[in-house]
Length: 529
Image (cartoon, rainbow, N blue to C red):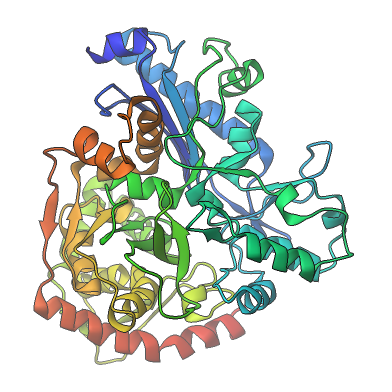
């Protein structure tokens, strides 16, 4: 059936993702092809030393995003969006939203971007013998306990952003297993929170509070399970016009890591993906456990529960975007009207003309702290020696290289030290929009082939739509990997780029400079307040 009929018959599927700078909605048809979209731009804010978004930001942003989607549907197909076949929500992973028994948010939402939980992260990693990253929900909760924060005594429920939105729309306190794996460690054998570690944590805080950890965490669901339906109140919250009908089945809410895996068809073992936007993370679905605990490597799961090694870096394209905006400003001063897509494309392509190692230039894209390299705060920085080859090509190249610098630091541990096998990495996110550029630079960074699907630009909102579609359209005993292969990506090869030896060597040369120059970045943090 055509898109118009699909919408009219209530067979379309909706995915909405809360990214760091944009809330995006993607509606797909019965073939999982995007047929309409909507978006709302938003920004986190630094308040009292905490990176946060307000509840008002969340709901006005979501309503505006949905309204734009509904308008797009009506403009393209002349149909009002009244019935939807299935729906799913995702958001940037981890962080901390703490509620009391009256369902009141007790402290501002603490996002993944905060690096304020180092003490908790270190102590829990030691206790569990399992790496607990600073941005995980349990690290935020334990840090609040260590800080003696009063709200912890009144804790009734703790959740992530994706789980919060899902709860308010369905009434169900649920997260998908991939999202859950960024709250507290998952036991791969059971697909649930790790019971031994739950017991260890309860023992750690024994006698302090009248709650047990398992009682304040959400239920864990896996891909394919139904995790609730849209309530009448939820429908009104999402669509205040009252056009959308209640009763839509919901898939488990997921994090942007899980939706990135779905959107790039990398949920099977020996596949991996790199999502590069405001933050960047690389994930490889593993065949076995790592040999030891690495502070730089997080262990999460696919939406259907396979073990994934993840390198997550807080900073990727923010500094690059700031420089592109400076070039836009310059162009306007010179009386030229600039198309941003063209400007990005031209500047990115210029980087391919640069020297293999960026001509001796050095940059750090640290808008915020960077755990992988040991920074609690960041200072964007560009530095060069007097004899470095300072030209536009090298300038753009160094900013593209440094966007992946912290990521390469972590991935080198997986690929070179642990010997993890990967057949192919799929790239998605803003860094890959200019054809061939981000892709070739990532291939140089990891010395492995990188593919970019035509649909990569659809990102996580499409990924969560696919997970919602899987829930209602999967065959009997059909795995998520099989569903994606046969019903979504069949015949779609994407563009694959193999690494070029001189670029790999150039990136390695740059990384020597990057590692040695971290002392300059540290001095900037210490002296530039």
